Structure formats: C-alpha cells, structure tokens
Amino acid sequence: MSVIRDSWGLPGTKIGCDTSQCGACTVLLDGHAVKSCTVLAVQADGAELRTIEGLDGTNGLTTLQREFHDRHAVQCGFCTPGMIMAGSALLDEGLALDEERVREGLKGNICRCTGYQPIVLAVLAAAAGVDRSTPANAPGGGR
Amino acid sequence: MIPAPVDYVRPETMTAAFAALSDDDAKILAGGHSLIPLMKLRFARPSVLVDVSRVVPSGVEATAREGVWIGGFTTWRDIAAAAELTGPYSAARACAAAIGDVQVRNRGTIAGGLCHADPAADMPAAALALDATLVIASPAGERLGHFDGFVSSPFEPHLGVQEVLTGVRLPAQPAGARSAYQFVEDAASGYPIAGAAALVVVADSEIVQCRLGITGVSVCAFRPLATEENVLGWGSRSDWRDLCSRVRSACDGVTVMADRSADAVYRATMAQLVTARAVRQAFLDAAAAETA
Image (tube, rainbow over all chains, first blue to last red; front, side, top):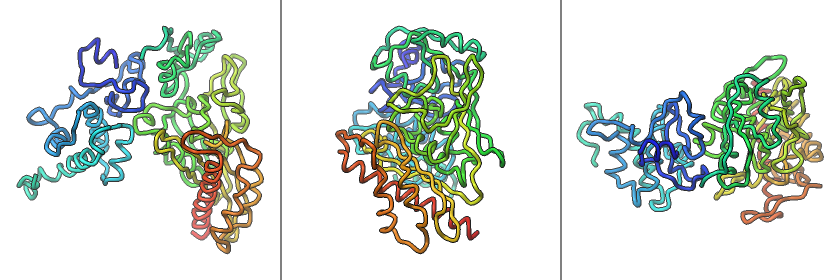
C-alpha cells in the first residue's frame, strides 16, 4: 500500500486500520480483491494490480461507480474506493447476486457512515445494469 | 503502522528455505494475513521473512483410496470452491468459506492458517473431525503428523525451527460418511465464538460412527471424545431435544475461554449448540446419501 500511495502517487487507495480489518485499501491483484495493507509489494511481484484509479468505464465511470454516485452510496467517502473495488471484484465473478451475496462479498469492507444499505443497493443496481443497457430496458430504469 | 525492520527472502528450493529458516527468529511467510498485521502492531518482530510461495505447493487432489491432499499454499478461496471437498469432506470447505472475508480468503493459506494456531480459527475444527494428517518437510526429510496434537497452546504449533508444513491430507472415509461445520460468529471480529465440525457415518438411519472437532472455545481446538460416543445411536427415530442432551458433554474437561463477547457459560452453551447443529446437518446429509 505504501508503494501504491507514496511511491506511485496514487492516493485513491486509502489507509484505514492498516491491519486488514477495514478494507479501505482494497485493490485487485490478478483480478481478486485483496487488502493492500497486508500484501508486501514484493509478494505482488509479477501480478497484475488494479487500483481505483484503474477503473475505466464510459464517461470515465464504471456502471458501479455511477450507481454509487446516483444512489448516494457515499457519506464521508473514505471507505468508498475499497467498497467499489470489492464490489467490482464481486461483479466480475459474474454470479447472480442477491442482497445476501452482496453483503457477504462486502463483509471485508467497513463503512461507519451509511449503514451499508445504499452501498448494497448500488452493487445490486450495477449487477442489474448489465440488463439495463439492452434496448428493452433502455428508458433509464427510473433513476 | 510500520513494522520493525525485517529481511525478506523468497527461496526457489526447499533446501534454500531450510537454510533461511536456520535463523531462530526467522518466520515463514505464507499468505501473511495473520503475520503482517501482527508485525505492524509489533507483536511479531521476526528477523527475516521466508516467503515460501515458490516452494510450498498449492492445489487440491482427490484419490479414492487415499482421500484428499491439499497443498499447503492453497488459499481459503480455492478450498472453499474445491469440488474434491464435497461429500465426506464438506466440513473442510465450509470452514474455509467461514474464514474472515473475501479479501482474507483470497490470500490466506491453509498451511499458514494452521501454523498460526489461532484458538479461534475455523479450520482446526474440520482438521480434527476429518482426522487430518500434516505433511511436514525438514532437512531430515518428510514426516507425517496428526493434526490432533499439533497445537496445544495458542499460536504455538509443534513445528521445529526448520520445519515447513507443505500439505494436509484428509484420509479416505467410509462410503456414505458426511461432514458439516456450524458456528456462531462474534459479530465484531468475525471469529467463531464456538465452531464445531462433525463427521458421521450412518447405518439403518442412525449414527454409527462420529468424529467431532470444536474450535474457538478453548486454548486450542479439541475433540470432545465423550460426546462422540454419546451421539452414537441418534438418528431418524430421535429428536432434536435428544441430540441436545447428548452433546451436553461437549466442553467437559476443557477450560472454556471468556472474553468481552462471550463469557464461559455462554460460550460453552454455544459450543453445545453448534455441535448439535453440525451433527444434525452431517446426519441429514449422510441419511440422504444412504437412501440415494
């Protein structure tokens, strides 16, 4: 994590507890969510690393980021990059998601503001968003 | 938080790993998800980290005669998804799935977890119920050791200075044996207040063989031998109440831990409850397999 933030100047990944409890530092290592505070840089040797800065969707935001924005799944914003990275990993698995699965997938990420509800809804909406891009669901999904 | 200065080596051969481990204060680094936080908190101050990722294998393999082998570097994620760990070995899969959270399971390994010897770890319950054997490498060669007895005090596995846990073997079980893991979680830490794994063999709709492992309750996971005997004969012709009375001995002879989340009476009660639940689940699965 200090390599990501201090050596590479990518401050999107947050330092929270620094002991793999809170998930604010979650990044994707070879596509899997990991807590970067608990991975030595040398252990990631040869792996593909993606931080919040590396997420790229249409208009610069991924569907999940847009859902976080539109549903105000953010209060202080500190946990948000980690939530979005953990949520992205969950969406990338391509499994059918329900509320229980989303909560299990985000269990490693602590939010002290929102009460989680809008975050869970944002991930569920992003999962459903795949359908919304088809013509039958085109008119905006009532957001 | 900054750990104390530490050297790091990633040996490419087991011989090089043994050499690096000859330092008394060397510590093996596997997934690191227990060790690195402890180093940041300065509860652990190893002189050198020996990263065994290149020398300890990962993967799960099943053979009909010999049971299942799990490479020491296999992550909890892969164990929780392993098709080989179904049927009689389901408890191992269920334990892996119960550990920490997604991120921890993506990095944490079975050898690292078992050697960390946390009294609240999930997997020791299944390792006891499934009679796991540890494959331990050292300069003197390879030895096999029963998991039962591997840990007798918290965070101190019976592992020599240069010994490396390279794999875990789960012996073949009788046809129709089934296992299960049940736990009550501490909402704050995610660790089990009590967790129990049960392996049962069923004949004529009742339990004829049983092995249990209980974790999170005492200084190390343990087998409640009297309870294993007591549940024999329980089955379709008995009820839940009967099972609850049969598991009342689950913590007999054991010093039960007390902490902020659970006093000793509550924890012991939860241990009985999860034991009964695990036995019932394993029984139902075994009974279904028997009639199938």
